[in-house]
Length: 317
Image 1 (spheres, rainbow, N blue to C red):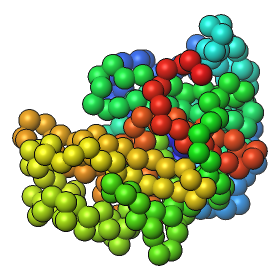
Image 2 (tube, rainbow, N blue to C red):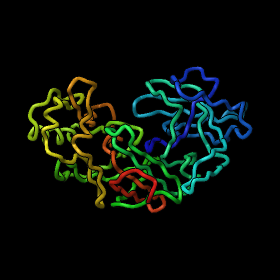
Image 3 (tube, one colour):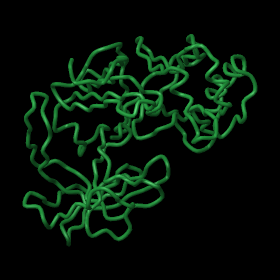
């Protein structure tokens, strides 16, 4: 599930260079009665992502998608019937859903079967279900935590609102403060990505060191400042409960208990902050999944508004 990209794709058989896939077999188009190659127009912009190319000889549309971690994929744009569960316990079939039949993957240690792209775009799966969707993420520290994704009319659209700025198919939000126990207002609010495709948050150097300075005052000198801010576990455990996170224009916020955003590193007795210093790796500020633990985020794309609500992720609303 990736709010940072719009293309939904799965690995197809045969595949010349694919990610290792351990649980489910690769999708076989030849075995499906409802699969068909999709038509598309030649994309004149070489920087579009995904970039589409139509071959008039084969009558196929191929795509190439680049991700922020520098991985990339290639394949054939196709359409297929999908079946989804409904909130009343039934199911619904949706015909002609666009997806990428992936034939080449490179540059990542990804081990899943594919990605569900929740960004905005002509070929995004979101358009098949209207203009609303929501997702809820449980706590990483709870092995049996519940999570959910709801597409369409039943989406959980409640909580504190903030405006969505849709740019190039991406949904962006105006960050006005960081939270380290209390809010620290930024001199200049900035547009950021809230990206479920990234585990870590990636911040500009000046924003990263706003967090570092606060932790220096609270805890003292860390074991390391970069690439991650790390402390001995007992230094974190001695702190009183406090929230770490981000506050957006309109009153929406993502704030996670300090004991959940400092993650244990194996059995080494070290805990590291789930936030990285961008440096030159990325050109944008990205807020990742670790900072979304315990939150439901609802999107109303028609109203260009998102809603953030701190809650347990059960299906009773």
